[in-house]
Length: 262
Image 1 (cartoon, rainbow, N blue to C red):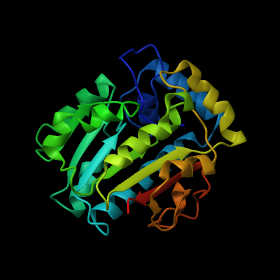
Image 2 (cartoon, helix red, strand yellow):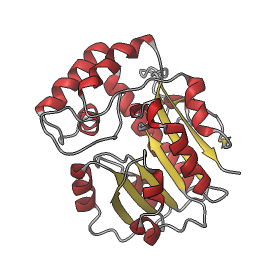
Image 3 (tube, helix red, strand yellow):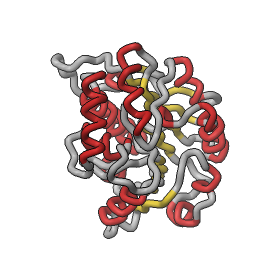
């Protein structure tokens, strides 16, 4: 259970972005985050493994987009705290001209991101919330770096499972997709609704965002109107794996896909 939907700074309340950082072995977390994350791990021992698998999926998807797909523009919504192999670093290793806009609504995430990006003219971090896609799409700093008339990759990685249905996540994704130029891509990864994750999901009730598990069919609904890139919507470890690690469980309860707008 990971992701980066966040609110105002409060070190005493578990924060999903900082908990994700803890799963990944980072240093940007507080006692409340660590305690809640450990409760999640007790209920779902795969939690750290899921976070690492999701991060690896993000890297493979970005390499595919910057390389084979020829995408040079990335909009990473719910980017979370910077860590190793951030989107702009992965994309620019493939295509040095790649431009990336990171979006998050956590002030601590934005401070870290802006400090990291201070010397990179091809990358920016802006305040925004996936639940308010129109605000992101009209943000002047987004338009200053990305050309919306050309294909862009929109990344919603480990974010949508923190948006309850009554906050209309499908409508938010539809607004983003409708604004994308033909040939653009959408990347989504999402926690699967399984008995194993039910107990872990409940731990997020005291965090700054609830965890919403969805079935594979419900996750596929975010790609309505898009053509899925091979191999389609699959377990994140099975999406174009680059190295086979026999010791890894390929069946982490986390699904991801890349879709292209016709």
